[in-house]
Image 1: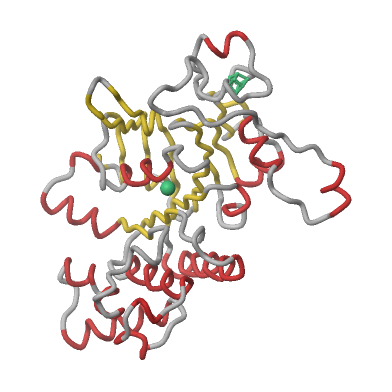
Image 2 (image 1 turned 180 degrees about the vertical axis):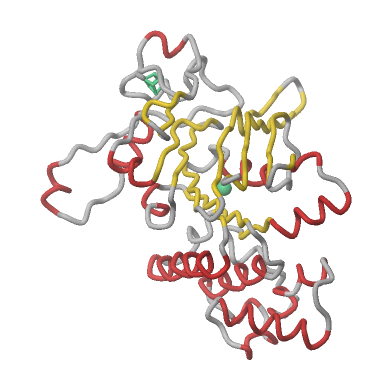
Length: 316
Ligand code: SF4
Ligand code: MG
């Protein structure tokens, strides 16, 4: 199949006790094609990191299916599970917290190599050197410690660590959000180059649409644990359908000062509701400028409005 991942109605609910259920991710369904970058976007707390962690089985799914190369990730055991762990890696948001400060960079990068017994001795060292060079750092860096590096360099080390197991699929959870703006483009370009060199598939998580624009082939927008719109990157910018996506796009500054001055900004009223007490019906209705009576009554289903363009909204 063209799809490396087929995710059907994945849910991740946390039982907080006292009858409280946090629906962090609800009815999440997407396919990810082999070799593509799928951008997952939404405000912090909308469930995108939880979705990523459930896909990669850092968390068990509450229900639904995550099919990776045709096999249900959450049912894998033994060697099949090991094989999955080698095929799917993660790059974390915080390059300061995600690297063990007491390990040398070489040993950090080699973690996956050691866990999976891929190489030892000189071959292991050669592989680590190859990896550190692939992310734009030098051989001499492998004996140093994380605190000796800048944020951008640390994120490169995190990427080398993810690559070490030769994965097919990488989840990058806001990998550039903690970096200086001047460094972000370099790291995005590194992701692109590595994708080309290694045929990688990415799930690229970000909190705003501007960040994923240049890297994503397709984009999914999440709000309060729900996917609300999925389409190609081009279509998402040219023809956003969901009112929430429209508001996210209107928040991106435009370089042309004339357009910037005259265009309309959609300012959302109110706060994102607590996921412990979500609104009835459409999760966006308490802030939606286009909400109608029926939006309080029923949760809109995801519909394919144009070929490959899915939206969950009663307007369509
Ligand atoms: Fe707005 Fe209603 Fe559409 Fe929800 S279903 S986004 S409240 S118009
Ligand atoms: Mg997050």
